[in-house]
Image 1 (cartoon, one colour):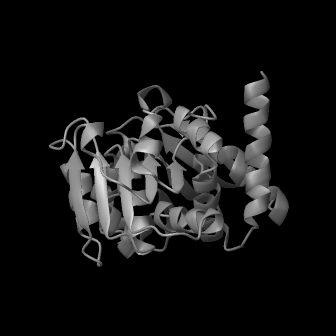
Image 2 (cartoon, one colour; image 1 turned 90 degrees about the vertical axis):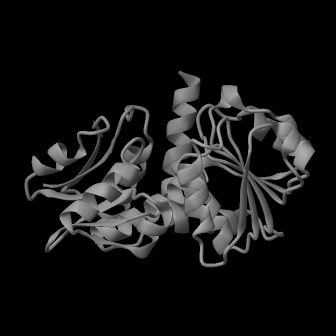
Length: 276
């Protein structure tokens, strides 16, 4: 048996097992397994040290993405350049010299946007200042963003994300604001905060043509509902999840799988949750 898993805390509601198992079924990988494993922050090194050779690949979610980068540096593991650019990793694949780290959130986010939207992405407003905000902000810079605002509770606490986005090769203008009244017009509005912390009025206030909503459950979020009413294009957290998972599956198994297979599996799982 070849084993893979998603690690994080909390992790019990992750859709990753549904997506990766659907990929294995599509690829005929009957001897592969993929589970969700709770690994609290600060315990990643101990968990990895306890794995045997049957383990092939790991997906990592909060709070482990930045912890993984520090561990990879400490142990001299190979890292894709975008891991350091993003300030965190979400993928570990077994390598000859230990593990190889990557961040599939960046290319996954860019591909998710391109699938749903072909308009301008010059001006971006990101709500939130964590690892997801950094990854999506960088992905939009890859797509041409030149000005990125972060709407955060504390600009001081968001410094790591601000620095990360400022480090993009295109040298975007990046600034933090702590009040919705300070935001300016944006082509793309990105939300990385919980549904109960959202201000749906931001969509009209910014005039954004695209909402990138990093959540997928509950759905629709207040911002997604506002976007649907306004006829605004929406990239959902499920779009991000399936696109980055396709890349993880390819790295872990060596095989490509259609994104539609994973999306359909995710949609069925979410429909079952909401009907329960």
